[in-house]
Image 1 (cartoon, rainbow, N blue to C red):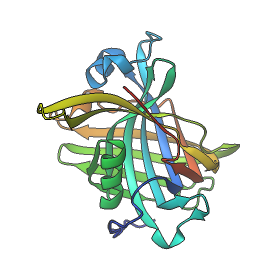
Image 2: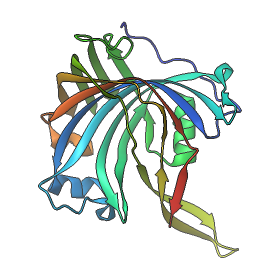
Image 3: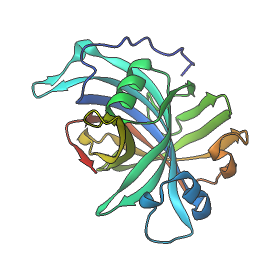
Length: 254
């Protein structure tokens, strides 16, 4: 798949949730040593298994999205985005899930509703995705993906090896710690901390492909992830043609 410039996607009236997302993604799983994870995550979110590492993922998405109502999707309000995410397995009370600590996208509409509605730390960046793995998803299809930021580049190379018949995506919980500034009854402002829990609804799980490949992180010392160098992936997989509804089931914990 040849590189394309970011899709134009103007902000629309339907930018409030819930949204439907249809697309594909490739994920590389690896471990971040616990001493490094403690510097990147809130101690309240660290997994309590006290293992030597925290499961981490680098994921590249290609997604079509639009409004979702009880009567169905708004096909006339479709936008598109690419996204790269570094997320960590976390734990908060009785909830186990993942927190997306580093997120980049090439679409301004998605960036705006992700940051303003959910508080996700989205940053605009150039994302390149070459190959046919995300669009075709057959054995031996490939992906060469990268996100280019001022501090360097994060890359993922993958080749599909097996369609193992598993669902492409499953149930997950997305956790986002937030700080909200509010007026305090005429006494100035106060900062409120909360934890947002987003439970995506899987409409169609898509197909699961086992892949082989590698991660390359080429980052300067000014970026927090530079200490990871180029971690070895425990596994790489692709989810092809999944469909989710995001924003219909959300919980806020103080």
